[in-house]
Image 1: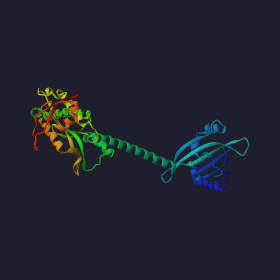
Image 2: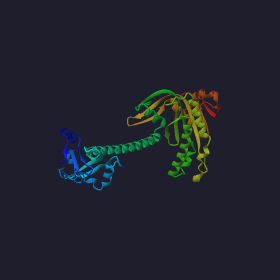
Image 3: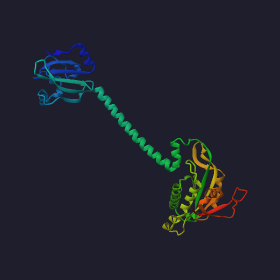
Image 4: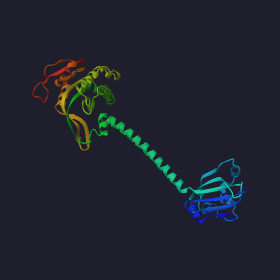
Length: 358
């Protein structure tokens, strides 16, 4: 009759959901204990160990190698057993050599462990990891789309400042000295009358690409599109003590290649030109609009004057106000034009035509 383990050890094995059998070299059942429900059938004094653990059938050569010290151990992890209630129980089986009470004889110690809870937890963890991975992928995809949207619908300097908390997402702003640049197309109206809507959009997009690239190269920020016109500001979120020179640099770069917008490709010989107006001074810079929609921009008299100066610029001209000229007069080649009287101003203003920067 197989020996039973002491009651205390039996209780510990049962608590830990473990069971064992001890076999002689002839594979006779010498002892058994632990959670009897782990065996395939209830142990009896005459039980054959294959009846108790049928999963070891066909493993005779492996058991023989363990008895002869040719293999240190053998394991069958997480074997599933169907329960009568329709559930599944997972059992791990370990086979090790064991020194019997007969000197010089090695038997087999077979240990069974109920791994159902552990495996269930592992499956839950794996599922959670998979869900987290999918969530991370979704968040990464959302962030990429958000970055794409932010960079194309909001000036990148504004989106960066919002993310870094240097710009509060609320209405209001600060008064600071900036340079404002306005640029629009000349000959646009006449050409657009003879173009299809698709051709008109293509023409505008080409214009905007040239203009925005020049503004970006000079470190400016586009804050508004107005049909065939663009408004940009310098020295807004990033400190630029040379903001006036940067604005003029952008204007001259725009005027350097008007032929990029030649319309012969759509059957028209007219060429598109830029008119550029720049003015510098104090303005309110920040979020302006309604609670439902914000726009980062600048308002003030210098903005209005910059727009009026742009309206006076002939094709290929870069016109600047007196404040802008004062900032860069040591490094600019410019002509003073006759004083101009602008709408809303009581006194004529001096405007300069820029040839180049020195």
